Amino acid sequence: EIIREKILFFTNDEVPHGVGIEIVQFKEPDRYGRACTIEANIYCEKNTHKAILIGKEGAMLKRIGTAARRDIEKYTDGKVNLKLWVKVKSDWRNSPSMLKELGFRNDK
Image 1: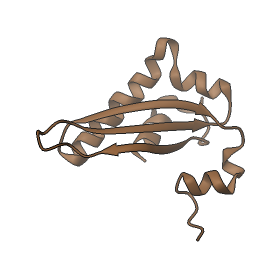
Image 2: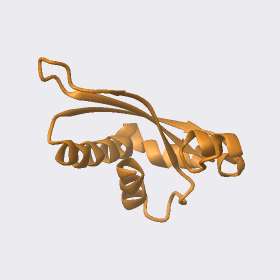
Image 3: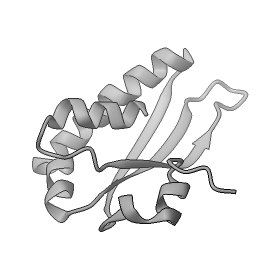
């Protein structure tokens, strides 16, 4: 949710609320105190939204990632290595399987 919050904050009205975050991998810090690693996909519905989320030369994605990483580090009280990818998935908000996969539905 922190990643999604930063997307909505930095993109304002450019990208509608139709973004979903999928945590692909979460690795706890190892016994040597290395940073925890989080890899996440950001799903949007259009290529134009993807372009906005990435920004010129990746500037927007870096801005979103940096802000999200800082908040996650405050929350976890430790270093975080955050890796983000932006993917287009047309009409994902109307797909029961995608909604379930992204944690918006709790079907049994």
